[in-house]
Length: 265
Ligand SMILES: Nc1ncnc2c1ncn2[C@@H]1O[C@H](COP(=O)(O)OP(=O)(O)OP(=O)(O)O)[C@@H](O)[C@H]1O
Ligand SMILES: [Mg+2]
Image (cartoon, rainbow, N blue to C red):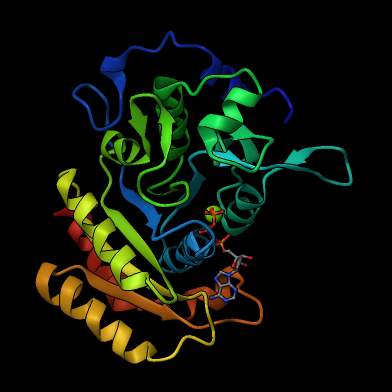
């Protein structure tokens, strides 16, 4: 990746911890933290779809891939991460790749290992400051996590801690496949045990051949919507082209409006 302002921000540890988002002294921002039941289950597709849906509702949306591991060189020789490219393409604020992807690594593996391979460290304060700087350009920020809810970032900091530091309500993308009820409920438990609010969840069709989808959805609704009051924001089918517009078409506008209202409350 080219040297960037964001990465130079991240390479310095000079920022004071007193200035962290979610902590006293740091102006918070409005948005959601998007997590998932696993890696490769549709967090980015859903985040891009939410970006489109909220933009259509008149919001100025900054989608951010908090940490991205895995870059390929494009035709111009620039190292690009696919999640960052998708989210950057979905937004209309003119954010740069570095603003959408403030911390990127080459190797497609767990971020703490990818960082180690490059002899870099993951700087908590710098990352939070970079996310905050991008969020300041928007009125709604969607921060995509990494993999599932608890991915290690440093020896004593993981992606659940990142969500707590950001102070954002969580949206859970449930990748519909065998085992997803267990993964979803474990994740919901972990979100709540951190004192975070589960704002909503999105069912995304990972396995188009999964049987009993309606029964799986009603089991999830009974244990999440009915028990916790966190509504399902939509059920995205397997799409021939999961573009932001195609995903957005399966998100429920009333649920999104309610979630925006709850942010203000
Ligand atoms: N509803 C869908 N229909 C068809 N393809 C989908 C759908 N949702 C996601 N995909 C595809 O599945 C793959 C994984 O999706 P995505 O990249 O959004 O997952 P992720 O959870 O963000 O993964 P990561 O953990 O790497 O960030 C992508 O190729 C994406 O285009
Ligand atoms: Mg992703």
